[in-house]
Length: 351
Image 1 (cartoon, rainbow, N blue to C red):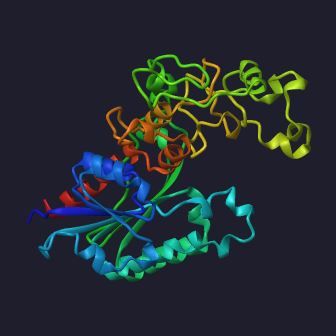
Image 2: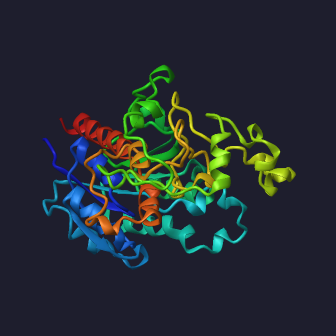
Image 3: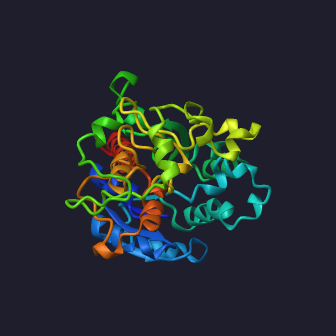
């Protein structure tokens, strides 16, 4: 018997994961997020309800009301809890256990119990897999008779032009489930140049006339000198000593060589973070032009399509807000791979 299926996205943000699921063929009925500034992008691109709510205040009944009512329909619950508490950088924070965000995974676990979905997918940083909270979560799902698999994914292996690594958990009550095989080998990885090489040139601080999202921050004079002295995939060691920062002269500064770095045309980009527009926060210098990445370039490297709607009015384009939206998003292409995995799994078990 052929089954119908639909998904609800918790911690949906601007809809990167939902868009990928939708492109794969999975109807997404609603997204839930605490940040109401994500509403416009989610509703415009996903064409589904956006619920502004703290997950700790969300009840299973709120979600069940959104699923199709037929009891034979397969419920899919997906989510990407904010990853900051689980990142390797945050591991240095001794107070992370006290962080409210640290317990969001337990709230997701509670929603699983209250909604009883047939299929679950969760995406996060690889470091989460080593944490007791994740180990307990997997054990809990297995106690509920879910078949669980988790994989640390290197995004270029799946056609995402970015050296991002992510943890993807899949769980199903139907049968064992595994992420689809890689779609790309190293020789066929999509390069930065393939994705953003044809965009119009823009200078530091300039806005492209034909694309309001193709804009970048203005570099200070010293940073302009630094990027001019930078080589693709090089480090601040390539600079003259007078251009180096005080921290570079300390022993601890030697471990942050990608900061103030220039990207390479011939490889996937570095991981796009929420600070991609800031030349000094990572290897976010353009491969050829003397500036940091634009919003448009970061969105494309995250695999968002050109026609994705991020803002309603041009005056509402804010680098910090859109930087957070895009940097925190699940790459839509990864959502597509997850969606195709789920559909294949359902078809194999129900025909």
